[in-house]
Image 1 (cartoon, rainbow, N blue to C red):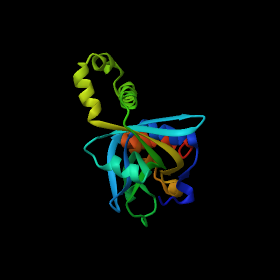
Image 2 (image 1 turned 180 degrees about the vertical axis):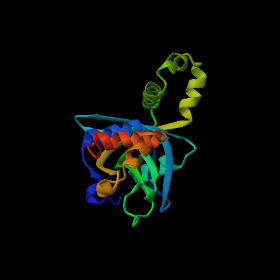
Image 3 (image 1 turned 90 degrees about the vertical axis):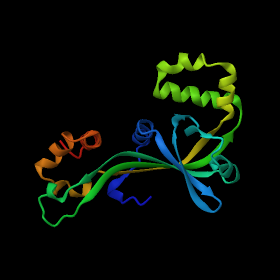
Image 4 (image 1 turned 90 degrees about the horizontal axis):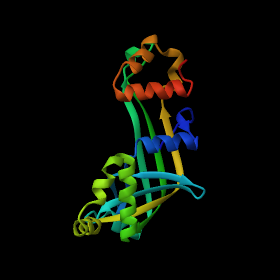
Length: 205
């Protein structure tokens, strides 16, 4: 990822926060010599061994087979993003741009076919996205559950490198009109979340 120094974010805690908040991400690797991507809900965790990303593929998805042959992968976490109009700057010599937050995690994937691993990742994702569903999931007929588990393949990615790009207009702060902050704070979910990050990181008072 191209990251100019003024947009670079290296704080592991902030990168982890973005990954966990925006955990529906894109896993990219090679399949038959070409890039191949899967869009997946993921569980991101950290312990003394480092950052780990867990998830599962549909068994019919050839991605897991490609990763068994070549385990190197990139996971892209897309945070909030928004169009920025040049009318929000004092200078007329500005052009439209896009502000956004993104985190890239690279590492190696280990595919796991065991029922325990598959059940574990499903339970983790339920706890993350809908804890109240757990009792209903536990009550699913055993034969049906076995069929569901047979239809997926679990995996874990051990992260070797994290890159964060927080493009928040840091290079244009002195040129902002007062409307810039109000526009973010009164906008949609993406704009409001970017406003939160800009205030939090000291780009606005």
